[in-house]
Length: 201
Image 1 (spheres, helix red, strand yellow):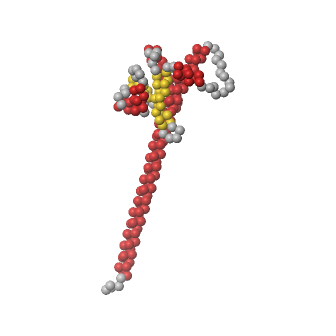
Image 2 (cartoon, helix red, strand yellow):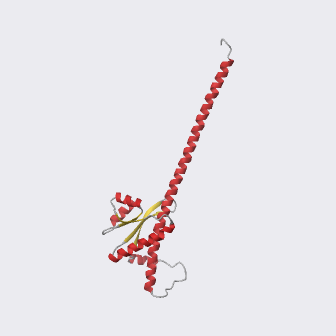
Image 3 (cartoon, rainbow, N blue to C red):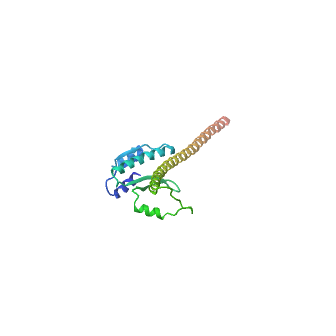
């Protein structure tokens, strides 16, 4: 993720300000020469994601009031369909002509076209706020899912290594035990033959 963020930011113009979620990624970015201006605590459950997003949206709104032309990008890990995860980047703001074009090209999934009751400006603002919330929520949940999948994969590898080690130790123990039994039997047979040996032979 650190390398991906560094390379992606290098291609973007203008001055950059980095906001991070979590102390670990903050330290990794600092090691790569990217100092975070703001940091947020990692949500420890799905219930903690919504308050985190609310806090981020408040910070975004405050920054836009000071610098209206500010662009926001989201970097997060996204789970792959088969296994593992990959870093991705999404432009969050501003909602430019490209976003509008992509939005208008989308087909409504049903035949029931929605209607707006009341002022369109208020409805549009509510939809944009919902879009921002869902985009941040999706990125947060994908990051949590990627982290949990990574932990699960590491635990499965550790479990397999433990089972392999136990099998190896079990085979080694059986070989040593069989060798010890063979030595004891050899001693018994040798002692029996020595006792039954005739004098003078």
